[in-house]
Length: 132
Image 1 (cartoon, rainbow, N blue to C red):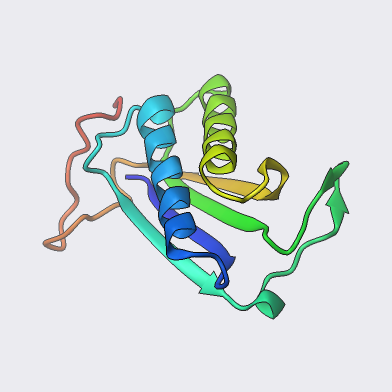
Image 2: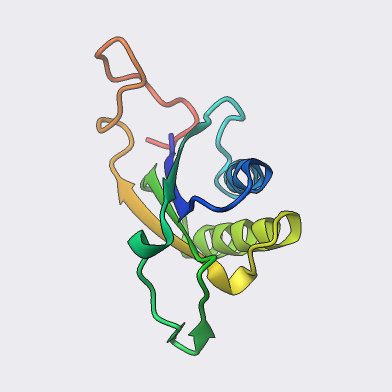
């Protein structure tokens, strides 16, 4: 784990979409210490009218190139790790794509990673990289 859902405008190039996904994955490896093979992403392409956002929220402006990154991960990371992850994701995306850092919205959902995942065979697999 984690599982990542990236919701973004359909108009973005394939290269941009792949760079967004890779930026998120590399950030998770660096900040959440996930295995490199733990790469489960869904890129959800949406028409412009399907993406709703305020022009400004909490003093941060947004445009029609806004992207939403929803990460479902097991519990156990510190506040500092989460802050570093968000910074890494937004910085990497902004440096490898035309997406501006203010247009990267990140939502982290945590669950008990030891029993709430099955990666195949209809079984719960032991996650050796997580603390018990």
